[in-house]
Length: 297
Image (cartoon, rainbow, N blue to C red; front, side):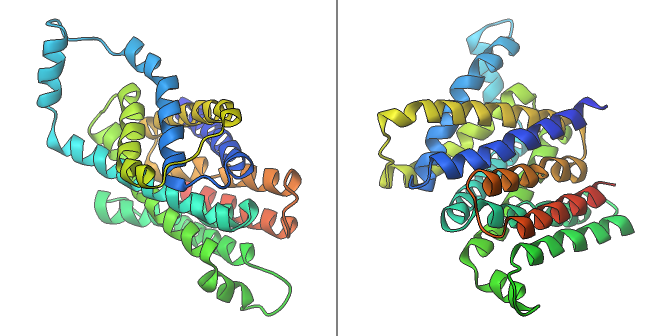
């Protein structure tokens, strides 16, 4: 199996577990502050990899500084835009799972390819095949099923329109789509090394959210420090696997595979947390997976 595809599957498992950990262990923390702390932990885990794999220029630190000063402005814009989209997507998702069940929010949030594919068609000239159009329809149906409760057939649509968690989850998905497109451009078109991309992305997202985190600082209990270290390790591993996948695959393939993390999060939310309507939402997650798989064909 292709290394990029294996990395995408591994990223799906890691991110699905991470979503469950966020809901179980970090509810009550302000989203911006939580993101900054977890990103800082992830950078600390990943920085040794960056240092070990990045060679200094022949003239040492001075050459490195001159190299940074001469960086292509397009690369800076892509990194900054991707970091901003990632930060917005994550904060919106944290708010969504804070207000709603993991098994409800996740299938809605993980229809990211619905947004990725049109963006690739419009901006990068991708051609949309009929099977991919059908995949978008199936993925959209997952939103309907995730909102289904016994009653009127139009009730799920009304629920999605009026549900604050559903609105936040969809807006987060759109931001994640922009982030995924930025990853594809940065890692393939601009050829930014993956071991530099991960800390740049994490640091950029953290800096964007830092003012909000300072205004509402999280009160970290000493007992939660190991949880932050563990969450940072998950993020570092997840971002590394995601980076390998996006460096090797088109965004319209990597994104659907990685977003099968929905099935992991829904199963954990239903089995461990005992959330309501588990079977219905499991069907929603399966529909989302089938839809994004069709999009990837």
